[in-house]
Length: 138
Ligand code: 5GP
Ligand code: ZN
Image (cartoon, rainbow, N blue to C red; front, top):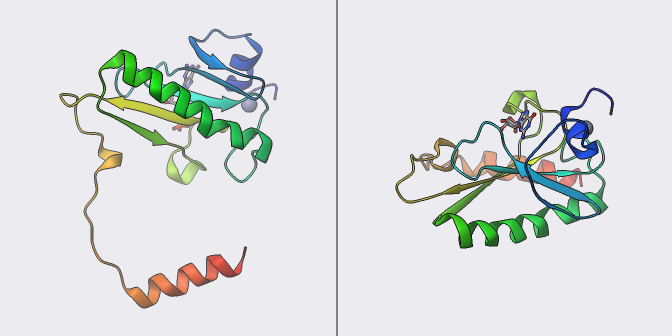
């Protein structure tokens, strides 16, 4: 897609710091790292989000994340890696080309707010009703 910054990264018309690629995916360093080593994996075709990315590209994302995660564990001395993937403006997706974040964290690094939330029990009737509605739409 002409105006997409990540399509331009795949095409090599704007620079990136490459970490990994295969015929379906490309991985590179995020230029605004939340923590050291923050990386992104993207499909090599333009697809905006989880419900638009073709399955043959989607199924390459998680194995690539495993390959990169193992390399992060070997090189960065991190003790955990957060995987994050945002879909849509209302959850703050900024670049509208599917991307999967890998955010390695060392023990001494600041807490990642998106990985820590309070567990507040929900209303089981409501939980069941919503889950059944989703299941029914599959
Ligand atoms: P989102 O909120 O859409 O999940 O995150 C988009 C991510 O893309 C951000 O973490 C941002 O730093 C990163 N990003 C945006 N533009 C560029 C760019 O031109 N190059 C690289 N390497 N990362 C980018
Ligand atoms: Zn794109």
